[in-house]
Length: 304
Image (cartoon, rainbow, N blue to C red):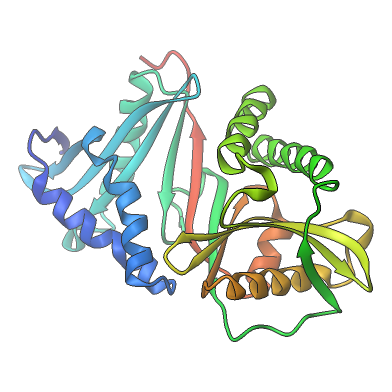
């Protein structure tokens, strides 16, 4: 019979977990320094997790790690790790561990459950909705401009309207993904933009761009250089609706890659929210691979 025994000392599991964390990042092309930074983000939270040993008739078959945390006033659970040892895979332990994690988090008041995947979801988490993907690609040498699309710095006169538009698009993405209500998303947008662009256009290591074709503005972009060692993070690359369908999406990405290379970075990465199939297809066609995928499941209320 499958049992779950919460560990007081999970140091052995932690060592194995941290070793496993590096593999998907280095496989995606991140430098060792960038991969280490990504691992550090996760490592900083491990101390708050509950780790259970999965056993069957007293034999250990794997581990599952979970936590429940407040996310802007909403309790959210996470499956932080679910690992069945190689000799025992495919025998139903994965499903049992998922069911145990869902129940454990629901009993502690979680309204939804999330998981961060670094490989395809397959059947085990296929019923969880995609909330977002981290996409990345190594770039260089500098790509040639496509369809005559170039990027220039945004002017102070253009910034207020762009900021309002970006916030509205950000809120819409979050709501479409199912991660938050519109009110929650609006509060998050105000916080995030205030933290990320405290000095507006003068915020160091940020490029806020106007994309142009034949001298006409067709969209905008926002890039954070050195987000990780050698990595630029693309907060947005946007082509105005009236200019879509002309191949400008890929051209905008090429322009962003040029700016990232000029800033000294050799990799560009983006987050795309769940439900945005157009962006996902664009990133796939441009060679941006999925590094991480976040999925969530709404949990039944009153499960305790």
